[in-house]
Length: 395
Ligand SMILES: *Cc1c(COP(=O)(O)O)cnc(C)c1O
Image (cartoon, rainbow, N blue to C red; front, side):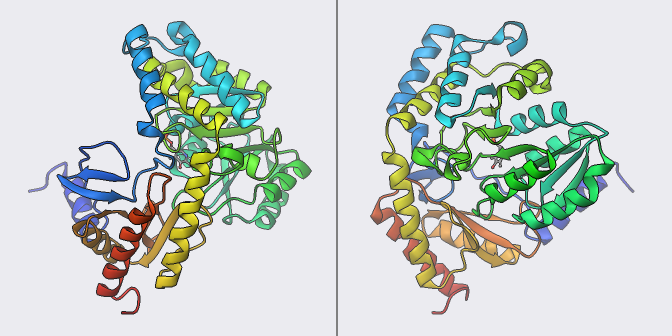
């Protein structure tokens, strides 16, 4: 007997066989340096809470105040009756922080890519996209129905070759890149990409989800890191990572951001973000605007952890940021490694296909400012133990 859901059963069995089936772990504590995960207290090398802002007293207090004053939901889309003064204030503050003309706050980073790309390019246009761009960029590109031409990862020379070959077949073009690549922790050569885009009159967009709060002066992001203020037309961001809350941002040139207020479908057709979240985001931007202390500590921890991992003999790939991939190859090995770490009290997830290419499975360590030297040493000791046990490094 066949059943209409046999395809699901077969596909699920194949995922399990390949070590790619996702098991959801359940979290019962805040995302601090130590967390309670599936009932067990473990060292947190896993969340995107780079700076510890998710539990920062100023963010929590701001959220409480907004909740008490404004209630739980705005109950309208931004363009009808959902635009709170908090949204407007956040957009102004985040634009100032990032050194751009304007910013639009949307529901998530994922949404920001869906919102920003389709209004800028359509069927007659072309998108030049880095081979390893984030899934939300890829989906935003597909939604636009523009032709997508992939250039080699972080390779402005290949970008230029592709632009030369294809641009004249289309009405207009845009180049889109991740800033910090979320699974490898390497950084896009933004200066080289900008030069090519300028030469050929392309629009430019960078997704800074893992750069904000991390790169640049006091966490002002990848554009600040390269000193390219005001050059990129669109800078996508998220409040869900270093900022510790939730929500997305489309920052950049005023002419573009204003146009997106008219055209972006997630902005026009999906409810505004809550006052509670917005107030917490606003407090996060204020905390980062006032001091570089948390970002400095993040980088101190990052340098220490990476150096010690290399000394142990681990391959941490091309990363130059707190995202530290521990390259293992086969997905099954990565899953076994993650499971053993967990038994030893360390929470670090295995990442496999389709999040990374086949045969490049890894453990992805997220270093944060929350970790003490003792915490880092604990993690390193357990990596050494499991690495030797599974034959990844020499005993
Ligand atoms: C995480 C991430 C997103 C999604 O952000 P959310 O706010 O979680 O939806 C988008 N782009 C990139 C590059 C990311 O790493």
